[in-house]
Image 1 (spheres, rainbow, N blue to C red):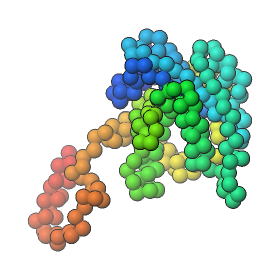
Image 2 (cartoon, helix red, strand yellow):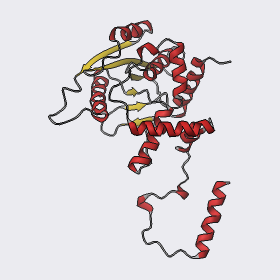
Image 3 (tube, rainbow, N blue to C red):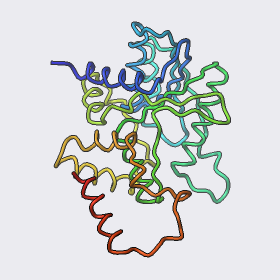
Image 4 (cartoon, rainbow, N blue to C red):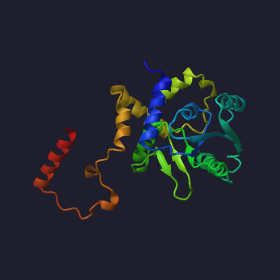
Length: 267
């Protein structure tokens, strides 16, 4: 039976090949928060590099904020050194940058950290930025946007900036969070897990619980939701720019024809 490390490695490998995340001579800057997700990603990319047919380089970076001290800097550095990772630890005064009247929030923190990551990527001549979002993050974001923004959108496994010469990759896109939790426990990484005091989004928690409820009935629900994002049937969706606002009166013939079409979809 495959170990949890082998299973995660296989899923990461599938994502890398499916979405063409790594190209020859890529220089990848791996954002490491100190949590289980980013550490799992770094661990795999470092080990994969030794036997991967495509040559690439990896550097790790930890953004140290002025409000979260749960991640032990010394232990994180020890881990980087133990794994043979070239690394950078950058202190960023996220709270001190707030303007008068502004309140601390996830968007502000994320934008400040992302800005520093892009600066370092430029300095280190890295063309790829690896972020540790996993399958659960991606499908939760999809439902967050649907339920609270009225928009079908989520985080992409691969995303290239329009204004900057960098590409974001998410190697954990096909890995479930519960697999990462098992891996982190197996590798003794749980002591380093960083929990942001501002990261307890109540809306995301509601979405997470809803998906968990569906998954209790059918364990394949997460995979099916993830699969649906690349298997879109536009015949049964209504993009705003393609809607005909001059809707004709619905006759009985049209109504019943629609029912027949829908029943065919259900089957």
